[in-house]
Amino acid sequence: MSTFDRYLRLPARRKRLLHAALAWLILHRIGLAFLPLQTLQRLSSQGSRRPLAGASLDDLRWAVLAAAPRVPGTRCLARALALQALMARAGMTGQLCIGVAKESGSTLEAHAWVLHEGAPVFDEPELARYSLLSVFPAEA
Image (cartoon, rainbow, N blue to C red; front, side, top):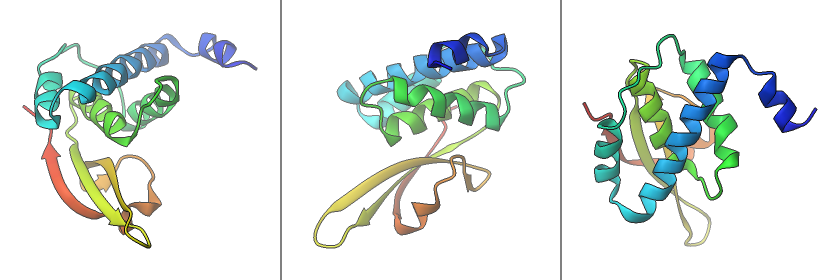
């Protein structure tokens, strides 16, 4: 079954979540090219306050993971910011975390993820190798 056929079979509620995730991913993907992280985070918290009533954390996780591959160039930071914005609209709090890991040799690698109630939202078993640099709570 094609991606489009699978999309057509989605319930309306899931389509709305997917559309919201796509919009936030695109906004954050573009915003990261032009704005400092904290400014982008503040602006996204002031955006549309259309609530996502009834959306669970699993629903939001699914929406971001389904939408991210369809936004070219999307990496962990845009994905984490979009998830944090969606969580806020669903009445949940998430902390944006940024960490670094040093690969063998001299390569430094960075990663961003979201914590909810102290646990990572996405199943990321490799997080243990990152040293936490910064935590950015959701803007009020």
